[in-house]
Image 1 (cartoon, rainbow, N blue to C red):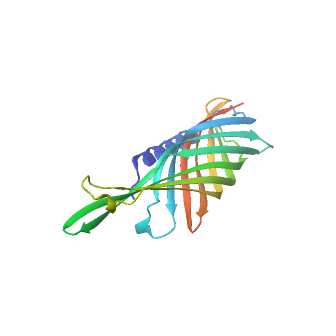
Image 2: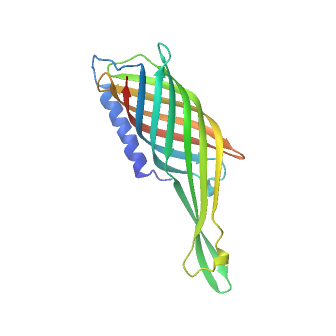
Length: 217
């Protein structure tokens, strides 16, 4: 599957920020008591099953917000909300009725909204940069929509009725991020989270590269 432009932009941004921060040698340290983070991410979804029929696979841009609090000399407790857009998959199919042929397009859209409770371990600072290693549990709401697009002259009986489904799942989640201090309170935070989930007979993987701005207080 081709990498979409928003994924390229986000990954390149994360790499550029990390490369710049690795060369920085600032003396000030970022505050660590509590924080609020807002940012953007790319939602990359891969489901189990036949790759040729992977109508739920896809990617979409999204927005994220997180709040965290210092609970020890090297630990944070973080609550995060990720709200991605809907990804879309199209599958054409041809139907013949008597002497007429109609090309219908089956459209599947899905969104995996999540709320995560994570513990974050803070590694030792290196100049402006302090890495964090995260682990915990995400609660995922998978919203799926199905409909069929057809030419205007298609008989109504050939067009399936739209369908909509919502499922919920708890998913183990891990991640890594980096606080790159701009001031004692303000930081840029690139990172990546991943989780595995299961809905009935379907399982899958979510990978979410991201970049955000964090205010500590």
